[in-house]
Image 1 (cartoon, rainbow, N blue to C red):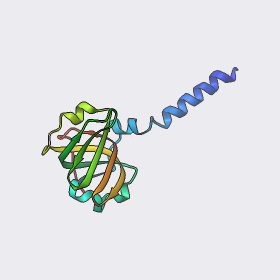
Image 2 (spheres, rainbow, N blue to C red):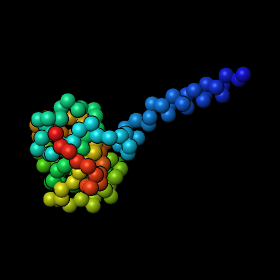
Image 3 (cartoon, rainbow, N blue to C red):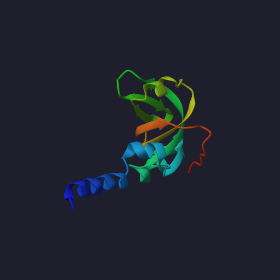
Image 4 (cartoon, rainbow, N blue to C red):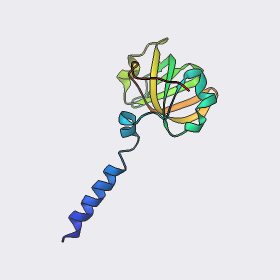
Length: 128
């Protein structure tokens, strides 16, 4: 039996079993926890590196840097939407949004979700 096709098949299966990183988890992975914006800094630290959902109020929209669209929520929360510039641009200051993202930083006044994306506001939401 030729070992090259067997090795290629094994590597392909290993890649599929390992998922496709955070992109796949953003689309299909369930959040580890859900928080109101005012509770993220004090309660979400244990979820660093994991996908969470935050419900918050948009305070600022930043679409000026290509590939780094961001929305900012109250309580110092930054949500990096990356290439989803249109998603960020459709937000308005004062909107209440639900954001799924990976918790990268979690300090009082300095919370970062990256990557992040807006989610369906009718999806189940049970904050901690």
